[in-house]
Image (cartoon, rainbow, N blue to C red; front, side):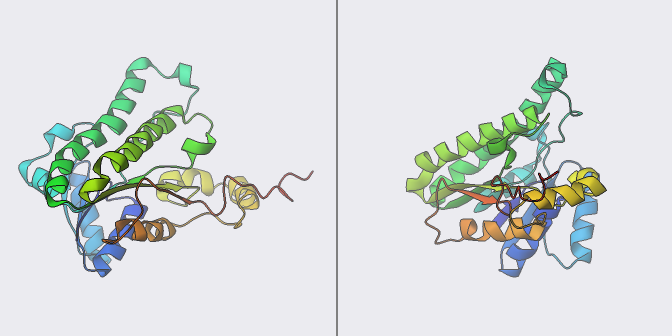
Length: 250
């Protein structure tokens, strides 16, 4: 299967690419700049992960070149994993309107553009697998992550509607919600001793998640024979259920 994974430099994308390549997929990834793409593909090569790639920026999706556009249109499975970095964490009203608009335009409209290119071809082939990597924060709320959660929530709403409209054409659209996953992007949190001590106490499985555990959860959603459509899988070790014993004791 021809599988496209956006945001290829992330640990979750890399873990999924490794799994899909091992399963025999023709894996293609994206990165937001040529420099990032070259570095990411070099890293994949060093780790023995066969993959191709092209530059795709959520900020400027229409700048995607002809080769990238062809990769999007020929993809049989697409995992929307890319997400722009959110503005510095502030209360919602403290973020300038221009930055709010830019963040939502990038996170939402950039992904809509990609889907608009891919869906006609999937419909014509009467086959497609779409997976959106969302966040548990959409359900639970997270302090000062309003823009991030707004974008994730908007795309989740789109995906359940895609499941309804395109299911008859063999296109399945599903959502994965990771919880607290130890990646380099949120390293500034889980490397703090206080966070590392307290958060596992709240999680029923008593541990932060790993990128490969998220990638594992996508496998049934990408199966050619899946009957999952419009579904949401949570990969969170049990959150938002809380293991309060011990952690909340004085």
